[in-house]
Length: 131
Image 1 (tube, rainbow, N blue to C red):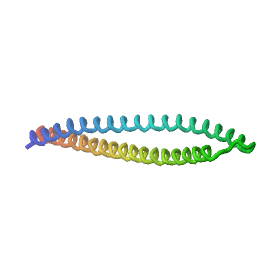
Image 2: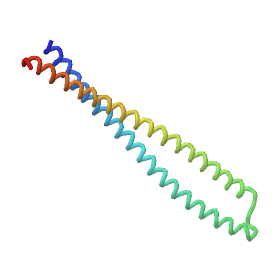
Image 3: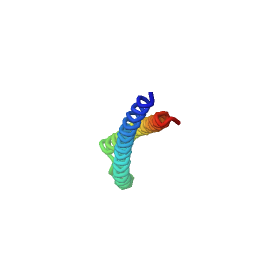
């Protein structure tokens, strides 16, 4: 009986360690994707700020009689596009955060299995030694 307990403990310890490492790597990969997405978002925001400044200059020109309907329509289309892009970003971030959370929870579970396996192994070893 002690040998069986030791074998089960050893297998659980190895499997738990391997799976825990895999889940930690998955979590790290998702965090990297999230950081890249945030960096891309920052670059897009900088571009938008430049577009706003440009639009302000155009608006200033419009007060002097240079406004036509195609300019107005272009500006409205740009605002619509920016809003859609912002919604897509939020959805991506939410999905990545959810994946990170799941991977970390799974890694925690496998860490617990590793600890249980180690405890079972030690108990089997103690039983084998007569303690």
